[in-house]
Length: 428
Image (cartoon, rainbow, N blue to C red; front, side):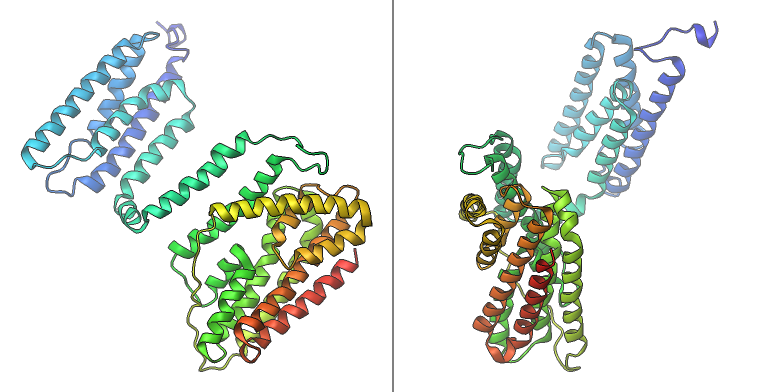
């Protein structure tokens, strides 16, 4: 009988079937190597490894193939494997007096399913599953350390984030509910999710990633909130009683990051506007970063270079989310009314006012089209004016909370960048 005359099995020609079987066995060997490398060092090594897992894979695939289209043989084999795993677990408990790890049955059942997955699914599914198993097995110590570091409050915070993104977001209607503004509830919630996601990422990095360098907290703080970072560093400057270079430069660095943050958030909703805003954003970032670099290089040689201590606050608070949503809707209504009543100058005036509160609702409103009839250049100019107004506010905060003596340099730098930002806005 020639190879061509051999009938296809489960829709696969013989060569393809052998290829799929070989891939399944290779992935089982891959998992077995990782398992033995982690668990066979133990005194009472659990069953499983470079021989057991490929045999389970072969058993699962053969039972699946001979029973197709019925799953009865495969399920019978699954029951036999489960009984074997139960016998092992019970014997271990009677011998050691402690419950056995569930890793052995979990990995065994997964490798038993490798065969049917190889036959019925694309190859990348099997490879991805095997890689995930290996990564979880190999990172046992690191994952246990992470679980000890993460408090229950952090898990609760992650749950709230998943509720915002995975449950509420798909349920929010995507049509205007009032005639006063074209903004929809979905756009409001998308804006909230975008800002919360960026702030939450910065929060996690500040809390769990070791800080290297004196200015790293300021960089992460700028991605979270440059205004809050400025206030915190100004207060620390006052408490220090003398000018500390990492605090002075940190306030300026946080504002430099703000320009990148604004353009990144705008890009999520309005790519043409983000491209229009990109050159001035990069230019103002470069200018602010250059001022910070000059001040850092000119610091006294004996000045401390310790990392600035920034308290990290959970950004996913119900009050904060409610406040943001309320501000977003209020700014949307105000933008529509101001545009209709006063035209482009009115929107610029609103931008200046928004800068002394929270500029995110205003920026995201413009990005999502709450103001009709304005060119991309005019929208970009309004965003630059809001950012410049916010810089003026931060300069005032720096002097108010830190004092003129120790905070005059960052305050003057922020005012200078604000003036340049307004000048660029006037060119549009």
